[in-house]
Length: 308
Image 1 (cartoon, one colour):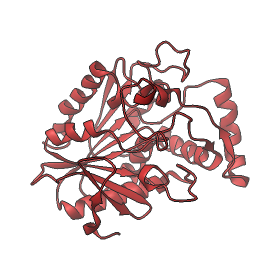
Image 2 (cartoon, rainbow, N blue to C red):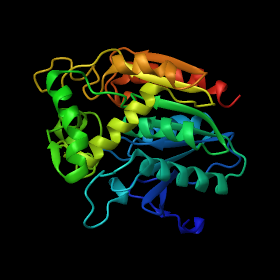
Image 3 (cartoon, rainbow, N blue to C red):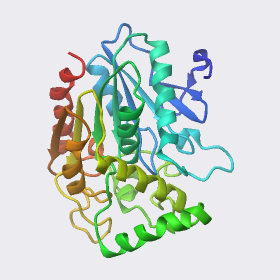
Image 4 (tube, rainbow, N blue to C red):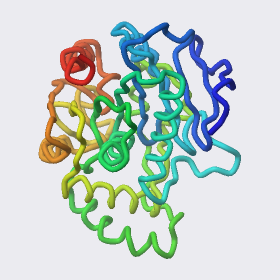
């Protein structure tokens, strides 16, 4: 593990970053004195940490905020990297585990809560079930990627993924613009400022190896996990197409199937709380003010289950 003394200025004002093997750990600066807990934010696909309002929210609850940019994403992109490419969801679990270990070394015995979104939520759920940190106290899943909306094209592609991944793991099987990212980006009229190279409206190609890894992980969730700490699973009120013609683009999840989240959430472990955010978008913390406030309120109400 890299030396904990290597914290330096981050690309975001008020934050510090340090290398963590193939990943990057970010924290709010200056660090809190004697926090009651810590939180680790895990981003999704075509994503990285930029949500400074989450740091403010969790900091206001007495939690030391951290985020991890996983391998081949955001701050962790290296020359020659294929963005977000993995061959097994355990690779993201390795980055989550490394971040949890670094936080535990810095804040011994402080309870940790994961806040994980989309593909990060899928990886975090499996990591929390299979090999959690000793300090893990709770898991918050913001629109975890348990399934795409079901349609004929998705079913046909699903059958082809594994055979292609075995012989051409880097093959691009899907590549579409992200209308969702474009809708959020301030430069295109949205409410949020972020680096369009790290969260791009052009979309990131979905390669066979990544799709196969995600499908295997989703089947794990469908069979049931055993997360032994309290879990909060949050989802939008409805799913819809990621299309500029969708009049509900700003009030729906246009990336994952919220019905699948509802169906599979009870299989995560013995203590699962579910919340539905009407009017929420895929990343609930980036929703418009009213649903965003509802989402954060649900976290505030749930948090004593994890950190009394």
